[in-house]
Image 1 (spheres, helix red, strand yellow):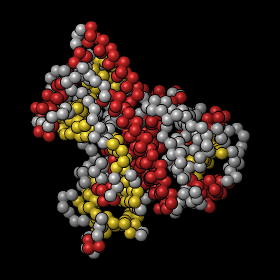
Image 2: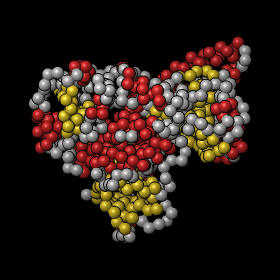
Image 3: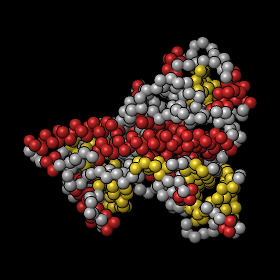
Image 4: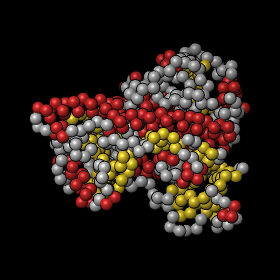
Length: 563
């Protein structure tokens, strides 16, 4: 923390903002994109020179795409990464030039935009997932965030110290090249500064959960290569995929296509006794060749190590006016792509609450709901990711798997059955994507309705308060979600007119930005099981009911004014 002696030394420049964000990754940038349209003055600092160079996360889940749609740039994101006609299959091989064991076929970006209009059941949604490298997403998020006048993005700047005062947080930020410090006075500070979070460390917040989980694959140290190989696809004796997984007794690995042409993000298991810190580019080429099954020319863009085997959640997500989010708050083994997508949802949840308090539209007690809602979701999602990692990582690949013998064929058939089942477990996850709920939150007016089971591979839409609103495509071709207001929406459903004036009056008195949306569709009324449904700014059902008799009490509850 910034101690009293340091606080007497004034920085040459002093800056006042509403929110200071440490960390310019997906979580910090999403916070900026949520706060910017609301006119909140926000400074984002990140010690890196810019957005990510390495590919990092490679899967944007459908719920995240729905949030990008809400902000107006889902179509732009879907155009990034792979070419529109590139397969997004996940394929398993003994080696990439060897036997194909299993494949789950998924739509291309072009197909996804068409198919979503007719999908029902678990995949009734405004958007399908998109396979795109985080490096492209971060660059797009940065472009949109810096377009807002109230947002100040500073890469190459680091948060050095901070202390909390009665009316805000005083911090020192400084250019990493040794330039002059700036003192920042912010109403709130958000640490979205990654797994080694400076903010979490200074707050003394410890982890709950498990780490150091050892598996044959996706447990322990992993070796990463960001590479360019224009010849790989032409040498591949199988149809193209998005994700290539090598399953053999010598070296387990996976590789995601970054641009659909020549760039790939390759990750290989490291065996006990190996010292990857001493590996040279020649070693990297050897490891890559072990997965491919032959030598393929490639250029190494970067290489390094990372640690799989995390399922960790911070014990607290808040200390006074300071919050933590994203990887600072939870660490995953990156199966299912849940780390990055959970981080985005953290930002979506926290941003509207900060803006509401800053604008006087809600009391500070509203902010208590951030930890109450997001910490259980982080525990849920890290649990799912661990289950996916166990499914693929504990599978034993024996040498006979590659034998051109009847025993080898039998071994491959058994592996194919397991890997096909695993692929559908990890990569067809509407339940994980859409089924997260905030039951028990102090600002959800629950109705006690029976809820469907929380399963990763099945999502049963329910409008019971606390979860994502059920989606429907309207007769005119629009998504229901496109009709939701940026702030609060009151759905008025059914052919029979139901008086909702009480909500408009109460919203005006409480300075809540609420928009009624009247839809006569009997199917929608049946889907939502109530004529009146209150939707939060983060597109979560806050309340539903038959009339507006308790409108003021409802609005006071969902904005943190009363328990």
